[in-house]
Figure 1: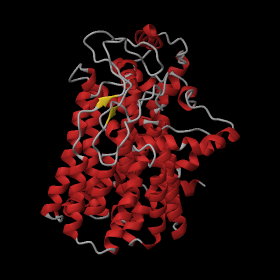
Figure 2: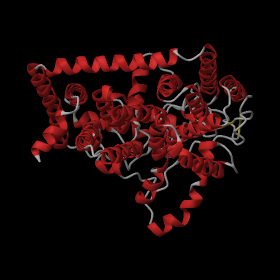
Figure 3: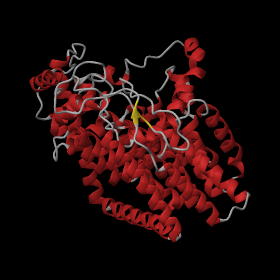
Figure 4: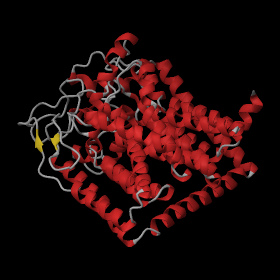
Amino acid sequence: MFAFLRRSFTDLPLSLLALFFLALGGSLGLLYSWVSLADLQALRQGIYGRNEMPEFVLQATPARLALLRWSLLGVAAAAAALVAYLLRSGRFQREIRELRQQLQEASHSVAQAVQQTSRTEKLLAALLLLGVLGLRLYYFRVYPLSTDEVATYDYFVRGGLVASTSFYPIPNNHILFSLSCWVGSWFTTNDVLVLRLPTLLISLAGTAAAYALLIRVTNFRTATLAVGLFCLSPLCLYYAMAGRGYFLLIVLALGQFFAMLAVLHAPRYEQLGWGLFIITGVLGLYTIPTYAYPLVSLGFWMGVVFLRRGNLAGLRRLAAATLLVAAGALVAYGPVIGVTGLRALAANQYIAPQYLAEFWQSYGLYLYQPARELFGHEQLSVPGFVVMLAAVLLVLPVLPHRWRRVALPAAVLVLLPFVFMPVQRVYSPARVLLYGTFFFFLGVAAFGEWVLQRLRVSRPLALVGLGDYSASTASTRQPTFATACGGHKPRTSSCGKPTPGSGPGRRAACTSMPRFTSFTFITTPLPRATPVAV
C-alpha cells in the first residue's frame, strides 16, 4: 500500500504542490499565531452584536485554537521540508523549469490559434467581448446591492482576514471571494466597488481566457457561440457583476476543465495539467463548498477515461490528486472548523435533506424553476433545454474526435448534478447550477457547428449570422425594476436581520432584479435575489 501511494504521489508535480501547500498552510498558520480567544470574541461582538444573532456561538476554545495553530504550522513545515528535499535532489529546479516550459508552450499554442483567426473573426470576437463588458458595466452601475452582497460586506469583508477565514454563521461567506474583496478594500472604502470590482475583473479575465482556450480546442464558430450564449444568459449577466463568489467558481471550474483536457489528451502538458487540476480543485472548494459538483463530475469522467484505456498509472494519479484536493480543502477550512465548528460548514440549515419519497414527489416540478432562472423564458426554458440536450447527446457519437473529447465531459458536467441532488435529497438553487450552463451551451455550440458543416454553410455566411446574433443581443433598453428600491432602508442581512452600517449615504439593498426587455431570447425578468445563499 505504501509503495502504491509513493508511486502515485511521485508522479505528480510535487514541487508546485509543495509550494502551494507551503503558501496555504504558512499564511493561515502565521495569521492565527497572533489570534487569541479574546480577539475572536471581540471581533464577533463587533460584527454581530448589533445584528441579534445569538445562534452564532463561537466553538473556539484555547485548546482548539492551539490545535488549529500547530496543525497549520505543521502543514507549512512539512511542505517546507519537502521543498528542501526536492531542492537537494535537484528535482525542484528540474520540475519548475519543465512546468514553466509547458506553460509557455501552452500559452503560445493558444495565442497562435487566436492569431490564426481571420480579421473578420477577430473583429467579431472583439465586438462580442466589448458588448458583454458594456452590459456588465451598465448593470454594475444601475443595479443596487442585494441583501446577499450587503451581508458579504458587513459580516465578512469588513471584519478583515480573521472574520473572512473563520466566521461562517450563514453560507454567504464565499471565503476566497471574500478575501479578494478584502484586498479591494485596501484601495477604496466604497462598498459597491469593494464587492463588485473583483467580480467584474474575474469575469472579464475568465471570459477572455475561456474564449481563447475554446478557440484552441474547438474552432472559432463553436467558441463564439458558446461564449456568446453563456455570457448573454440572464443569470450569468447578473453574477458576472454581483458581489458574490459564483463567477469565481465558474472560472475555477473552467480552469479545472481545461486542466483535465490537458491531462487526458495532451501528454506534453500532463504535469502542468495535474498541478492545475489539484490547485483549482482546492481553490474552488475554498470559494464555495458546492464546487464539489463540478469537481466530482470531472473526477468521474477522468476515472471513466482511464478505466477505458486501461491506464492504471492514471488511476493512481487521480486517486492521489483526490487525496491532495481533500487535504487542501481541509487545511483551507481549518479556521472555520476550529472557530465556527464543522456543523456550520457541513450542514446548511437553509437547505435540509428531505425524505426520499417527498423529494421524488416534487423533483420534476422543482426543475422548472432553475431552468426558468438559468435560461430566462417562462414557457420554453424546460422544453428547450430538454430538446437541445437530447439533440446534443444524439450527435455526440458522430462528432469529430477533436470536438467529442470536449463535448462529452461537458455533457457529464451538465447531467451529473441531476444525479447528485437525489443522492443528497436536496433541491439546489439555480445559482449553484450556473456553471453547468456554460457546458450546456458548449454542447449546443458543438451541435450547431455540426449542423452548419452538414448543411455546408459557407464560413462568411456563418460569420454574418454570428455577427447579427451579437448585434441583436448586445443592445438593451433601460431596465425596469419589478420592485422599487425606495428610500434609505435599514440594511438587512441574508437572514433578514438588520446589518451594521445602514443609513443615509449608503446604497440601499434591493432584492429585485432588472427586466431585460430587448434580448431576442430573454422575455422574462431575471429571478429575484433570494435572501439566502448557498
